[in-house]
Image (cartoon, rainbow, N blue to C red):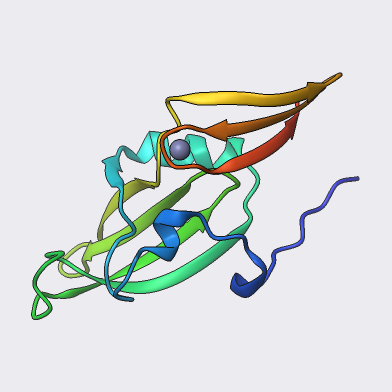
Length: 132
Ligand SMILES: [Zn+2]
């Protein structure tokens, strides 16, 4: 039997883009809009580390713009978000992928199936077991 323990935000080793968020009411940079299917795929493939809820300005540089309800889900190396951008007359949502895409990585060590990897773009370090 496997289970997962959700941890408090303070215990979560926040990636640099999350620390750099600055204002509480903005999206973490970088972020990009993804499809509903890409959002759901990520949700079912990766293990959730922590979730967060914020109100995010519709226009990033306009503090007078509408605040949108946004829920963030953080995995080990990236995050996804769902945002309700219209409530009435029907609910509509946008989906986002958060953080570095980790396109340039370097394996710093491996032992059997245990790997340690650094991202050369953002500096994030993570470890994983490829044995299944
Ligand atoms: Zn990266």
